[in-house]
Amino acid sequence: MLVCSERINLFHSVYPSTAVPRVWRAPGRVNLIGEHTDYNLGLVLPMAIDLACFVATAPSPSGVLCVHSIQLGEGAEWRVEDIPSATPQGKWSDRVVGIARELALRGVPIAGQNLLIDSEVPLGGGLSSSAALGVALGLALGGPAPGGSHAALELARLAWTVENDFVGVPCGIMDQFISANGQEGAAILLDCRTLACRTVKLPEDVAVVTVNSMIKRELSHSAYRTRVEECACAARELGIASLRDADQQGFDSLSSLNETLRKRARHVITENARVRAFADAAERGDLPEMGRLVTESHGSLRDDYEVSCPELDFLVDAALASPGVFGARMMGGGFGGSTVNLVRWDAVDRFRSELSSEYRRFREITPDIHVCVASAGASQVIP
Image 1 (cartoon, helix red, strand yellow):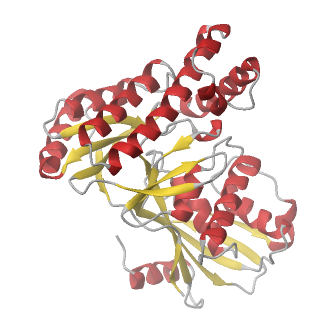
Image 2 (image 1 turned 45 degrees about the vertical axis):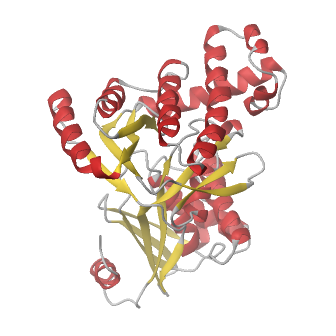
């Protein structure tokens, strides 16, 4: 992890002879429970983590918006006057020009700038690198600055709007919300319909550990869109606005759906109930119940939502066989990415060692394992 002076030096190595940059950060996230419920306007329980995306920026007299990504080793640029009419190109840089375009359309002046992106959040690891980037860019390009819940919410909405309407990913607002609104030392229970939220402190004797399968399949993009469409179709056939409302009706009405839609709806209904139960268990320090709910969530994602894969199932099964693990599940869109695991602190080292060895035997891949620290939301690092 780079310190501030190193990040400034990195900026000047890409953009020599420029002013000292301002630097903004926005964290990635772990979703403890509540998967694929956000775009169904349901309940989620994410926490911001200690891996973040950093965006450094300094003025440029060129009248051009320039960006360079350290991780990708690629850059892009746009003339400032062209930004309001920009269209997506299907590239990573769409998020950059998308944020600039949305701000320009909202009346925020976009001047010539040099941007440097340096992210600690692994790409494709299920820790929401895209939301961290969008939120950090929103700050760097003049969006609502930190300083209260309203500004943080508007920042999240800005990044979410661009992700949906410009980049074209039909996601819920969870990832952008937690990146902008994260709380140090706690998760946040978020109602994705009303955006009402409350902090949930986790028991001190449990570690939240992510295991990156190092697998990323293109199927995840098409299957994600398919699941969004299937849930919308199920809601229409049930005569409700969203599957969020199905929990009021119970399971009886699901018999009218075909098998696929019934399974998708059943996952959303049961997952919303698990989020509530998990938050209650966390607040009373009931680690076995928290673990049971997390593991049950994986079974639902695997069997009813059908978004798991052999690598994720293996990692979950191997974790559950390791001493000191309360629960484990896949996390994120699916078909790759990471698992989230609730592990007793004194068992973390053994868990890391055993799971790495088991996965290498299974796939000849060393997983990336990270012990997550609940962290604050987006902020300015260097004024």
